[in-house]
Length: 132
Image (cartoon, rainbow, N blue to C red; front, top):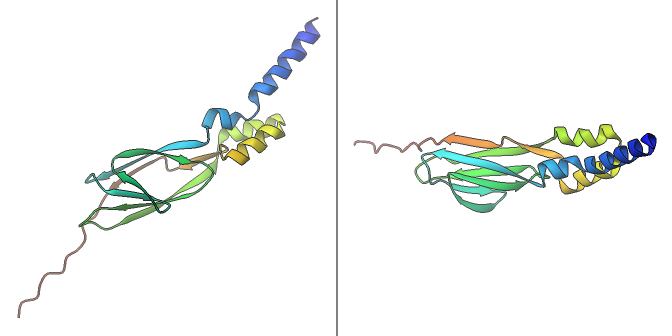
């Protein structure tokens, strides 16, 4: 009787741990973007997302190019990169290939870094008119 109960617990636990990263991470991640001064235009991968400050949900499976523009200031550009999540390794080490495959296909096996972008924008240099 104890052996059957133990086997049921092991099987249940294996099913619950299947696709850990998909359950824990989900397929998107919130990235916070703040600038000084505020109200800068945010463009990510060529798509406009409004102005700063803002929290934006991005798909985990891709790297992203972030561009921040504000009139009178230099354009700021950076990349958000994906790194393999700790939770993905839970599937791999448990030998649960279907869960790891699902995490890979959905992109939930990744974390996006950085998850917060705080930028102090630099004013553009204006040429002074020359005296003649």
